[in-house]
Image (cartoon, rainbow, N blue to C red):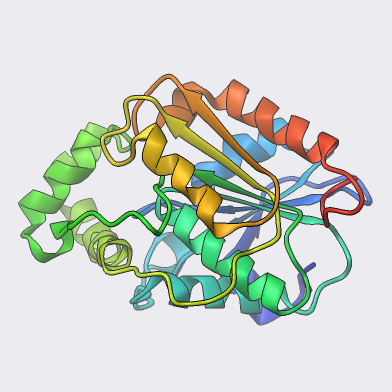
Length: 259
């Protein structure tokens, strides 16, 4: 699915382990404020039978000097271009929180281009038909830090490092703005399978809100609820990896999915 020698690929996509020949590909899309390295443990667990890639958004880590994206659609477009024209390798998408929205918009681009993903894993995010009036990105730094702290996905010690905070806050605020201003543009429902995962105590999405993703595809749909909050997938890493493995193994020919 990718030309790994291209400049766009090297800029937007990261691989951590060598995959076996013919392995299906899983592209992971980070949450707000997140980076590609968040998915290193997933790559460790799935390699070499799955070729795990992770998106690196502008404005963080080795892309710190770049201006962060202004919208979810801009992030999806950047990843889409980095994937290139395709080499026939089955591609699955996994997005958590903001990454779920990026994954959804990326799936729309891929399906429109005639290269539908094998399956889309959507984690920790309600479907786009459900709107909550959220304005964290409009508040001060203290408000933004408070919100991130509530979700238990960031080491609390990071918030004590002023120099580090100054580096990460611009991208974090841009990500929150992208998520909070996101609206689904009109368009057809997708046809690819959706596997939705969420925590039972997530303050950002209820299981009922997570189920509304079924409005966005005519393909097979599953919802799996795990113990935990917004970052349930850290504590439930084994179960989530097992779910990914089982799904890639189960989906077969005729669905555009991994055989």
